[in-house]
Image 1 (cartoon, rainbow, N blue to C red):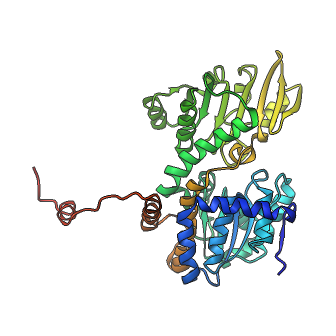
Image 2 (image 1 turned 120 degrees about the vertical axis):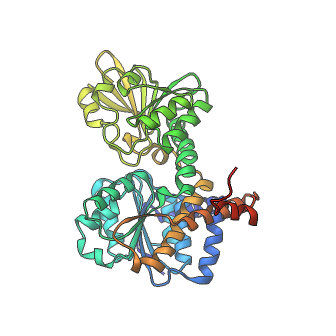
Length: 420
């Protein structure tokens, strides 16, 4: 059988298969869902176009959707996040159409997105919103064919909610990112560990004793700040939200403005989902040798255009490390071209945490297939029963048992007359 796709080298398929199998061993919740899907076929007749980071964990999600009867095709959601052996294995071993090559330019990136949309999907699965954006801007004639979608990450949810507020969202979308079993674990523990992994792999610097500036104290920022503190860094947090800034201060971190923090930091990590969080006013006062990394989805958080304009020269000094020479003989180092350092310089989140995120993806697709006729063109949270089921399954696979309410306790929670 010849499977469509565009990958770097199908000769990498065996390496990719071994890596996919390794990740699968750390994803027991998704395994259980896949086993049920194989029996029940809840996605039979459903075509799914997925625009996600093409990693070993994503491969196991695609296997699960296919097991459930879906006709699924995959493209990359970031030019630097594709694992080429995984993409090869998806096509050659698992017979899933995949369009992903690490290091593509913008033209090929969007050509791949259009390739999965050419399959006339009924469900979109996105990580960052580029698939949805393409549908709503370039391929509006297909919107009527879409019964629903899912969105994996904070950046994409921000875009979707803006679309909903302006009345232009063309179909219902489930915000996977807002599930407790996603953002409380994937965002904190996954981003915390994988961002650190990318920074250490690309620079090999000692973290202990460094001053690390974390820009943004959402769930991802919390994870990053805690992981770096755990390795002995002095961590500064910058924020625009007073409540999050207060929380960071009470969690024991120094909190200050970005301009003030720019003078102190040795390493900077942006995790905000917003534009130009680090820009010329910050570059002007940074130390010689400052290292800049982005752990947000798009390469907009570090204003590289301004940095290039300010620099007299640029050169790659290590794999994934670009040096910018500034006046005063200062050097600033940017990792992975300002793209998602977790995946561009490392392997992304550990499989055991993606197990929950992708369990939510699978079960939300099943929910959309069953309930799409009654849904509005809005952004929906993951249904609570799905979120709780993912947590229950995860605990079960970990061998953890928890209590249940007694009849007396259940009755008390529903009673209003029983007082002191």
